[in-house]
Image (cartoon, rainbow, N blue to C red; front, side, top):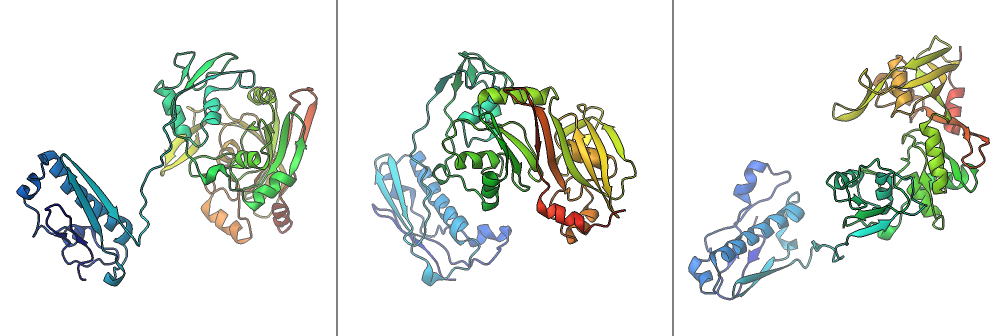
Length: 433
């Protein structure tokens, strides 16, 4: 293919040009250096640059800059496309030499290659004094609320490095803030997207507006739909809590009380006051909340009930994926299973976790030899594929009921989330025994 671009400059610099080359689809890496290179046939001699008063260092930077710009053009715009010389705008590099500096301006009239960074000024250090609204909150949760858009991994890193200070001293992420504490927040540029707007899927929006199980001045209970994370994180722009805040912009305080897996549906509590959040957190930590889940297990489970006491160890890498396994080195985990209905090749059970470990019910069910239907992480791939053909497109795990003392009145509150209509329909097609 004919030469696709020509480089030239004024002020005594000679012309630059590319050799004739052909760029094919998926060009092997071994051929790229030979077929895509600058010609040095008319390379300007050292003397032609020296008379402009440029030092050796400046000349070196100037030459390297031209090569870098050529590489960026090829990588971002031309690498995987067959080039038509009729559609390529001539690349012009204007080099303005002035004493010891060189300013390079590159124009692409037909291409949008705006690489300019935001001119937003660098944020400054902030000192925040803790009031009653944040007293009792863990330091990491407080920083997450203050540095929206910053990954949790980075927040934990700046705490470890000592960039975050409490009363001018280092603090652990588990430290609970007290009224009057002074927290130093380092200058961190918070990611901005969509001008602060949160995109909410229609299904999630309808659920947050209609599937309210209970609400008063202290907290909200919703029937969370499957397929939505409770909060944003790695690879997830927003979750249930971010969507709820967007739907209720006038709400002064909305925080998650506990968590549910992305693919799990059912009862989810959200606090509307800091005092209620602290009380509910204490209830969950002290096992004062009775939790009941519905799960469909693979194959026929012969026992009517079973108590599983198997310690769980999390964050174990297995095939590149973070897993939780049963291990004596793990933390104590207890789940009570009760059979509700046996089918031809599945069993519907109630699962009541007495501890709150990550993926506890899913791992304990697999430990019994009866993984949950639709569990891509701990389940059986062949069984999942069989049930998927019947219409089971999700993890069959539903947070059916929560029972706990009200954070203000102390009266027993019982919340029940009905099984999603699609799961109920699928169960009607199973053959009971």
